[in-house]
Length: 235
Image 1 (cartoon, rainbow, N blue to C red):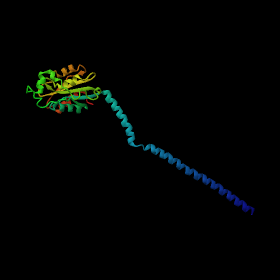
Image 2: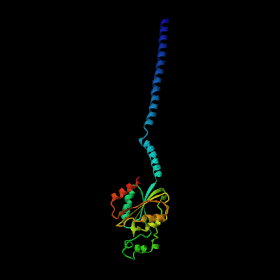
Image 3: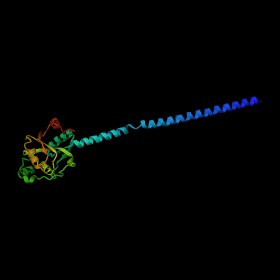
Image 4: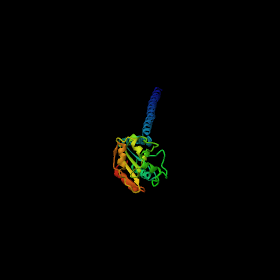
């Protein structure tokens, strides 16, 4: 009887020990996946940053660098007066080729076809030609927006009696070209650019005026582009 009790007690104690060991092992195995799962999710969140978020940072940096470069290199402006559209076409090609801004000189009182009839001595241009006091052409806007941002200015005009069309005069007189490189260009049926650029430079009194270029009234786009490339002003 005593042996039987001892055996029962021994078996009970052994079972208790085994049960306790099993509980500890199960708890350890239950905790481990929880930790691994948390670490895995944290890595996954870091790895799954949207591509466009990275691109946005890169784009912002690139934009800032581009803007800084543009400011440091200055900007180019193509200014023009066009009576019949010939100078406007050349100016547009120059602006497109150079990546420049465009500004049109527009008189408050535009010239009509009759006004431009130089063969009529009573036409507007004929009277202005004969009387220089009539050449004070009022403009709708004399100074382009952000004028101070431009360091290269190209000025285009048709040739009238060997000089720049006088609609350009007040633009030149009323703006400060200090620190700007100024390059004139003109259109004409047969006349050359002559002293028109030099006369405008004298009216301006400021700016670094360069030799100009004459184009025919029906100028070839490629000729205009080749001239622009030769100036090394393309962006």
